Image 1 (cartoon, helix red, strand yellow):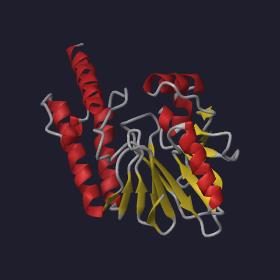
Image 2 (cartoon, rainbow, N blue to C red; image 1 turned 135 degrees about the vertical axis):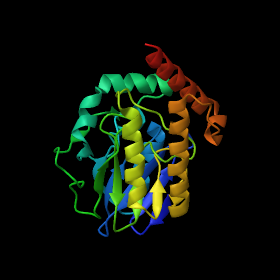
Image 3 (tube, one colour; image 1 turned 90 degrees about the horizontal axis):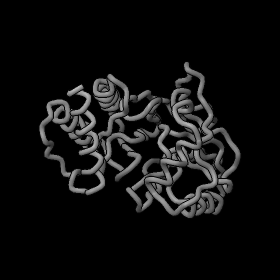
Image 4 (tube, rainbow, N blue to C red; image 1 turned 45 degrees about the horizontal axis):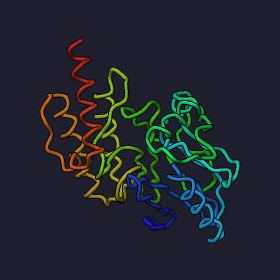
Length: 253
């Protein structure tokens, strides 16, 4: 576990540098955000939480992609909050099929089953440090980041990564939504940024990631091959090329 603020710890899986975030109150109650990734890693996370005398009091899922809606029978049966749009976006069967395709050979105890927040909810309903729900559409239906203002921490979901380029959802206005989401996150000016995949960033690096994502989106919209170091990863390059092909086919249609 890497402590990134007084009440915030981050664990990073070697697979896709997938992060799990723990917001820990002074009494040991934890808000567990996007626990990941393999069943063994989630179990080890639960064991470490117990070893430290903490307990999971609530969960939060930033968006409805399978690697961000994982849980375990070893974890307590507590609310696993998500936006109502995110909760309704995919069934457990669809999410399980995604997992089988993307990371075969594993069997998770729990995929999906998030608890919808009321549409007017602005903060995660728990008793620990304030966790403000920031709508950040563009990547997935109901995507939301969490801002911890007293900690100066932003848990960005699948945005502001140093290892993955922006990937757009199927919404017709996904380009503009993603751009507005980036501006919204930049305006928060957090001291620490925790991406769903990649390394924790501090303030000036976080702003560089905003600019890098904006450049990538501008190149994508113009049909210009982007010069982006993240595309050196074959998996990310494949995702980018699939995204380019899809956008080209839509434009042609």
